[in-house]
Length: 361
Image (cartoon, rainbow, N blue to C red; front, top):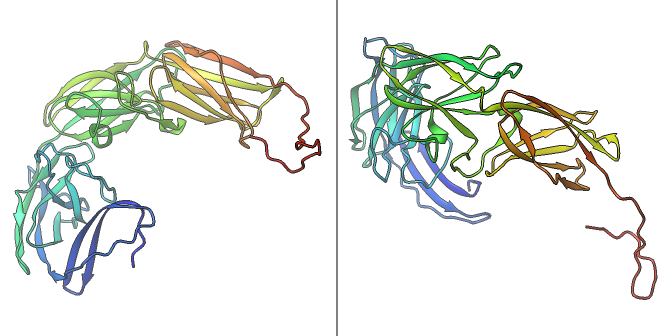
């Protein structure tokens, strides 16, 4: 018996030189699922991962993949190892190994299925083998995976006076947008305190650059839309292999700061939970006020943001009757004064007898 979370799973069963690979889809909560395991003699693929100039790529992951069930191609996204998805556009990992210091690898492979061997640098440049179908006990030797020459991107993010860009995230996405699968597979880097950024190992071609707020601000992305999914598009760049493209990306007209002081009945509200929701989207920022009821300053895109404050003990929730407007290049401080009406309540039954230990919702 194997305990699993609900969802889709890929299982590997091994006994000596025999093994089996299983796919379990749509497993429900507390659902018992019986599967038949047929152990077979496995196959093996060996080879080497290197750059175009012959330099071996040491200690790097090489994946054995199932082709995407829908429109498989070199541009098909690869599902991260350990993740699960029923999306047929993903290429899905079967097993993974690391290359040795000379770039060599050895992969155990299930037999009788179409598979391919794949490697990808963090920047996005990748290489895949032709499809392989192996027989029981077969050893396919001498596979050469040659990563194409990559491009680099570097530069600086410019913000308004006094607005610190540290922690902003930049994605470099091939294609038209950061919607759908691209939002999870595009190369990403974090902007430094000086506004500088760099990304290496990028594939050539036309890319769009997107910015998102710092991860430490507990960003929660909603549905993708014209301004949704937590991203704003900054530029389009054409990357050329073997070169570094230097860019200056301006957020002067898109980014501001917001600092809040939260008072309840005139006193600081310690440790309250604050949610800021970007107007017209389901994207939110979350934060917890300090012991003196302060939060921020937080980086935020220039726009209106609605505010919800929650008591840390769950006793109450307050929504601001007005939106807070963040202006580009401006550090805004705002005091939220929450006042409650105070009184007493006596609970009785139909005969007028007091009822104790009653829970009020």
